[in-house]
Length: 333
Image (tube, rainbow, N blue to C red; front, side):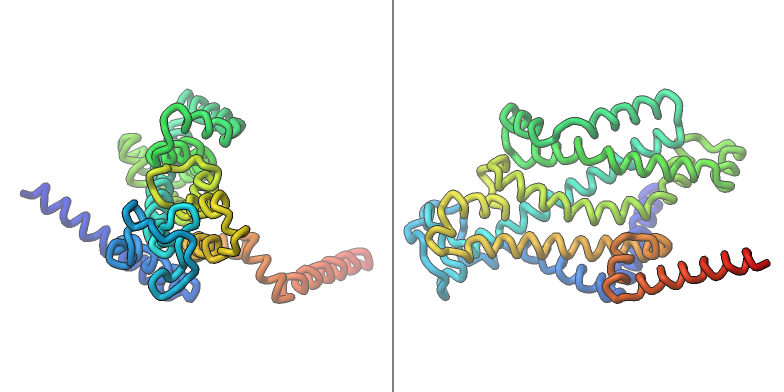
């Protein structure tokens, strides 16, 4: 009973912490936009059967082919099979969100574990993990993806597996670099002197120290994975039994959407991909500012916006003038 109460208390504290963190994102203007869009996409994905007017998987409803947008078919129907494009767009939200979220969380989990082990344990473990990272970074991913999907099938389980196998290396390298700094901090040394085990130190001290990087990376990785999944589906490497935005684009190309002037067949999934990626990118950038404000001033995106506002260039010139004046004063003295 005590163990159950302890577990429930931890779950409650975690939910409260997540709620407070979401509240911080909500207070940010860019974060509010991202949260609204993600909530909208999640709502559409969960209630797709209720929102979609037709079942895009039902082969008995494919009589009308190549129809233009109307009140009955808001985005028309496909040329080759007669599927309702709006219904396909709604159901495609499920695949894109599921693949993006599952892959992003799996990459964060695997990258964090291996990065922390490599940075804190060191020695043979560090050499082994880093050599694996070096090998994985030079392997051409697309040809190997084609080989794996041809051997083991094109299900989204295989697609997620491929994304995770090739996606954890960069995060593990960054986590390892941060852990090498944290392992020499005073609170980690104090825990070691107090007799704390390696597992206790890695989970209670090192992991919280890199959590801000993991949370931010997960949001940004989800956005990148959605684009990658759309690209693989467009190349015909996605699951042929599931509807995704990338598969919609592939079918639009093979069905001659541009040739017959059915531009809405291409625009609809393109807008869906843009909204999903834009939402997760917004949340990721806001997380970067909240969890590590120092990263904001040094990030390339922040400098880009300053350049567009003509303030960054002016600061550069002001700094150059100060250096020139300092040099002249030194020469005079």
